[in-house]
Image 1 (cartoon, rainbow, N blue to C red):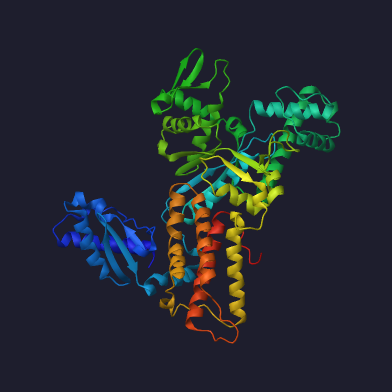
Image 2 (image 1 turned 90 degrees about the vertical axis):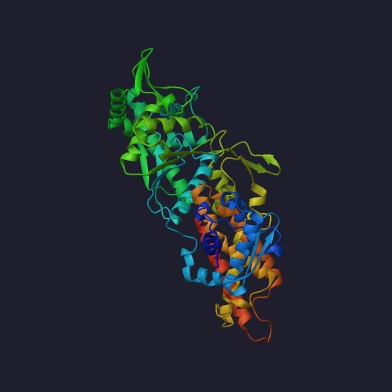
Length: 550
């Protein structure tokens, strides 16, 4: 019996109890929350349902809990139900009923933990979207890991997810980048507002090698050549870096196309016609305060040039015109103002602003020998994704970036992430999978197959802990999708790995010496196989490998 099964049983039992006593069952929540007690001696699961609905139902919560305990205790698979405190209900499951979860995991395999609750959602998930003026920096690295993992989690709940990269190839930053390349190629000083770093010289040299006569072109043509070729080379590097990091995109949308295709002009005309834009001081302003923004925003400047938000407005329309039901933007720590701005843009265009979600990620710092790493040889003052992967590898980099909530800053200890110790979280989780893989190989060599015929024999406390932890996986994935928090999966994997390691320390799985295999051995092999499966499923959701050997 899974926590979800128990939740449904509680709901059905509570409905019957209330009706039998002439009370209104509509006071029940849609889903009854169950959790594991902090003290295992209190039972396998607990619920505060009676306290939650007692007042609404017009009955003392502890009395209601007693009625529920009587009903639940009589249900198949429940061995005991007791009331505690002002109305908590503690439930202990029969070993064979609880352990049927093992059979469910083995039967569903890679599908365990997946659901279809978001099956009606077409989600556009935009993340990274770094300007093509330099390598992916550490903040972009965090979004590369978290964004890709969030996409996997949303898909695991049935959503159709399109991973999109918004290619910012329009505007002043591209002009500065082109001038920086030109300066590097001609031996001039880097422009005051330009880009530094060895990569600028490397790209400039590549442009010159690919276009031998570029330096003899007229000034305007030369600058445009450095712009077009330099942007293409940088973007190729970015895409290669992300691919090597395990992050690939379905769509690359160019900001410049929003202007070249006339979409920006069409949106501006639509907003003017609807009265959502007004003219003041020679500029055109969006009435964004009407939609929750802290101030109205300039869309067309007084000199007739579009402001940056003009492209953002067109991009919102571009997304919804493609049929997406939800647009999720993942932006950096300095983009808080975009939350109200993008929602206002959607509302002004006639869309439900709730179809726009903006997630803001906080800063990432690298630490080595207790000191923050402040420089990258390749990119001036910027620490890049390439630097991080070179230091710790893809798996450690991805896992360490995913395992913390994005609304908190994190320090990544490079020394820790390269150690093969239990203090290294990715090693701790991967080692659990590798140890389970070794057990599977040893069992096969001994001719011992996993069996679910005698799961009731698994009555050791550490076995119960492990089964109950396995049972939480589906709810963790669902919460990670609903709350847009893939770090919940990583943290769960650490809990599961720890629970397994404690089980392994107290419960011998395979026979020793001349000992003959028993049903208990086969049941424990099944428990190990289920644990291995859930670890692999969870690691796949965070985009980290599940090694067979370490």
